[in-house]
Image (cartoon, rainbow, N blue to C red; front, top):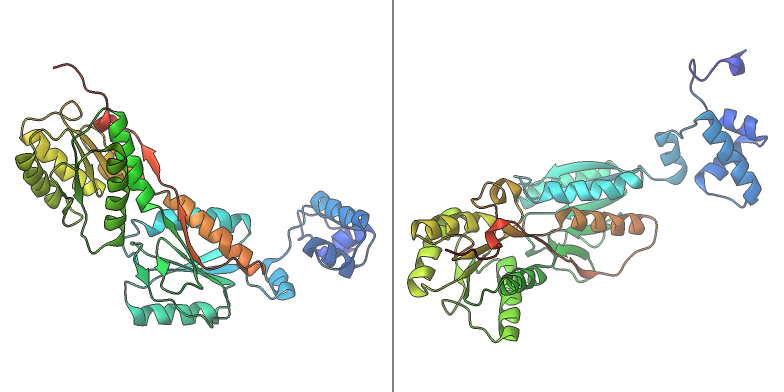
Length: 345
């Protein structure tokens, strides 16, 4: 008869679990889904039966019972994936633990495309939305009247009611300069990204705070702002070293800039780190590890940004909404040879 078939020839059903546990199908369902008022020993008996049989609840049936689809939409404006992919991987770690699947949509920085993707995701009845990007600049909220919770990661909403999770760029600037001071450098210059970017200004703020605490001026008198590029790094290093030849360390706004700075430093006959210590920002390994010497840099902990944002989203989906505002995640210093100790000539 059908019940005599082995697990290898048919799928285990909740009816099999109920039979082994000696309860009704309805009771087995409540026990496995954490619903209803059941005696602890009954829940334990059903759980043990499910484990013994290797029963795995059908996701569709589970969703129908709970009114959820166990899916999350991830909306990104980072077409290159440089920042959104590490955020997404961190988010998937948390969402996977919650047995959630992710639909990823690329808006290409197009508001019309973004609205279309959001409408499509909502039509698929996702349980929540993660919004991410390639910069921390405040951006318009995707809406306060959506039927699902929304959390922003590596970008922030202009609405104080929305929760946004971003790297601590101020703290990252502090980390970089404290490290340079700890290596004995005192004439520190800064080659920054474009002033229009919040991250560039915040990294300057962190650097400035540490230098002021140490009673030290900034080499060159002011940060040199330019594009996030190696070419700008080359140009800015030339400007800085002509103005302040005794500069013994340079903090760069990102790793690309640092690569350009390193070229100019070497061309001027200066050694890294003996004469000039060099530190970047982002920990973009393709850049940092290919530098000569390998580049000390600040890691923005993007995986952690994604993980924490996803955990907040899971909590909101479960009905435990967190308050709005901006949560910053500490950066991490990755020490490599470009800030090593000075060696004798």
